[in-house]
Structures are given as structure tokens and as C-alpha cells.
Length: 85
Image 1 (cartoon, rainbow, N blue to C red):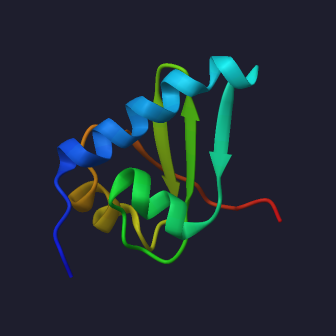
Image 2: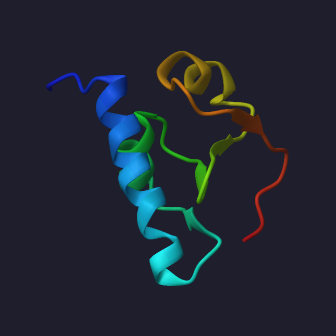
């Protein structure tokens, strides 16, 4: 599989963030792991990605904290204990 550079992930997020105001939203919550991988590079099987007009955060449970911090650059990785269903 081709390695995607951190710059590509950053460009994707920036492009998305520029569109958020046009949609009349304050931010977007991504739950689908394919979208999360496309925007961040995180390869775990579960997580949440929150993108606002200015910032992005990756939320993962304790199983993926170390992996996310290794794989993801330029996004704060936040660990959560319980995910709301």
C-alpha cells in the first residue's frame, strides 16, 4: 500500500475546514474509520475525529492511544474511557 505523507493529510483537513463555514456548521464529527484514516492517517479500527473551522482532534480509547500518537501528526490525540452509543 502506498504511504501517504502527513502533508497530504494536512491538506485534506485544511480543504475540509475551509468548507465548514459554507455549510453553516461549527464542525463535523467523523465516526467512519475510512473517513478518519483519509483525514488523519490513523489506521486503528475505532475512533472519532472532530474537525472544527480551526482545529481537529482524534479521540481514541486506551487500546489505540500509543498507536494514534505514533501515526498521526499535527492533531491532538485524546483518550476517552466510554464511547456513547
